[in-house]
Amino acid sequence: MSGFSPDYPGAEVRVSPNFGARREGMRPDCVILHYTGMETGAAAENWLCASESEVSAHYLVHEDGRVVQMVRESDRAWHAGRASWKGLSDVNSFSIGVEIVNPGPLAGFPDFPDAQIEAVAALCRDVCARHGIAPERVLAHSDVAPGRKIDPGERFPWARLAGLGVGHHVEPAPVQGGRFLSLGDRGEPVEAFQSMLSLYGYGLEINGLFDEETRAAVEAFQRHFRPARVDGVADRSTIETLHRLLRALPSIAA
Image (cartoon, rainbow, N blue to C red; front, side, top):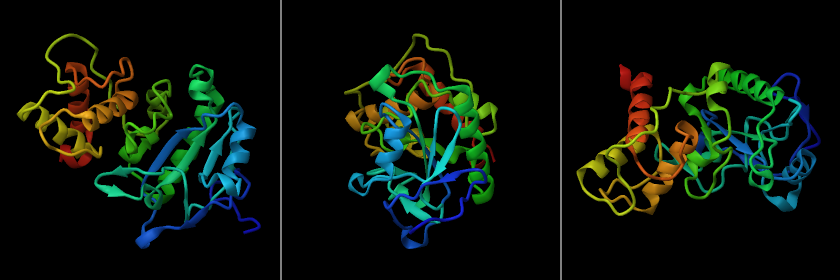
């Protein structure tokens, strides 16, 4: 492909060769946010457009707010890898991938510039409006790949993004003492908590055992929705925040 017209008005186009057809007639109904985790935006853009990398995304948002589209929204970009949400794997076939330039752990998790977050919000609003994507379907890479990925990280300003009209957000319950569930616990309370995580969308086995898979899902949940402490322990704050999110879902509230 030599080029295409951008789906998002104002986006620059730089074609990546790393894409294919969405499988089984799937259409985009989810947005996955990533950070690039590379030293510079130029390096990330080059890597996402290099055939040998075998990775890509639909969009890249630079620190100054510049948006580059690399894969058409109708095509399947290679951004999520091994992942699942709401019981479905092949997340790439039902999602739009947005890479946000940020070095992450390479530079101590620097803040995301205002211009960049405003550009991410504008892009996501447009994508969600055109595809009818619900707020709760704007997710972190870490949400769909717990234990394997941590991006865009606990420093990503999800609350600000929600204030700009993107994503599903509730005020997290304050971190405090009280009863908690952690690695090795088992029984009905663990099973009930696993069921709530699964109901929201996280992929884990509901087996009544707080195993490593459950701990990874809890860390992913905290990283997105309760970032004050990311430790994989289902404390009172984590459980209450999850309750608040579920109550705020249209399908649950109805």
